[in-house]
Structures are given as C-alpha cells and as structure tokens.
Length: 117
View 1 (cartoon, rainbow, N blue to C red):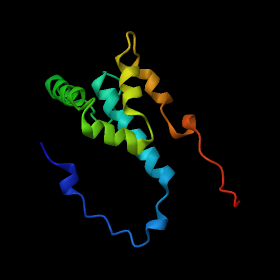
View 2 (cartoon, rainbow, N blue to C red):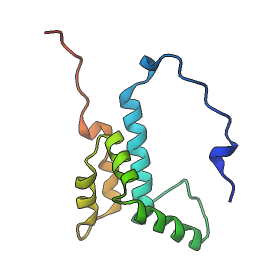
View 3 (cartoon, rainbow, N blue to C red):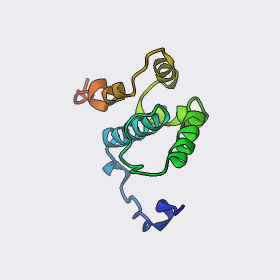
View 4 (tube, one colour):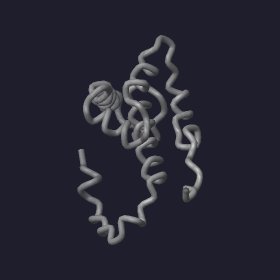
C-alpha cells in the first residue's frame, strides 16, 4: 500500500508562530477524531473510497485499538475534548456514529475577544 504522506512535498517552515490560528488547529483535530471514530464504529468515511472489505476491517480494528490509547487522549486534548468523556459516550448502548457530526468547534463555543482589565 502506498504511503501518501511520504509522497507529499515537505511543508514550508512556519516563520511566525503567531500566524497559527488555534481554532483552525482545533477544527483540524476535531475532524481527525470524527474520521477515526467513524471508521471505528462503521460510520461514513469518504477518504476510504471503495476499498476491499478486509482492508476496511483491518482499518476498523486499528481504530478500535486506538480508542483509549495515549495517542487517542493526546488527540482529544488537541481537539479540546475530554477523552474519558468521549469514550464514555461512544461506549453507551445504542451509540449512533451519525451523532459524531455534532462534535465541532461551533458546538463547543468560541471565546469572545479578550478585554483588558
């Protein structure tokens, strides 16, 4: 299987860290969580396309092993989500992967402008 990340050109260095928007980074990590949770729980994942069933099953097994791992909790922290809370939610009987679309920056709110004291 080709490694798509290895085939990409290197990213240019970030010259000024103040150019990074933390909310855009958070949206990226939330999107990554949603894709991985959709794979783990059989929800839609357009990035997989029409791969064979055994490849999808292997990917699902990897995502289920990822749940609760230190990497899972690190990604949750970067997304601004409590990993234990998310694990509790997805482990409840009747969990529906379609509900993952509610996991977004907009649903969690965005702080207003800082006001000088």
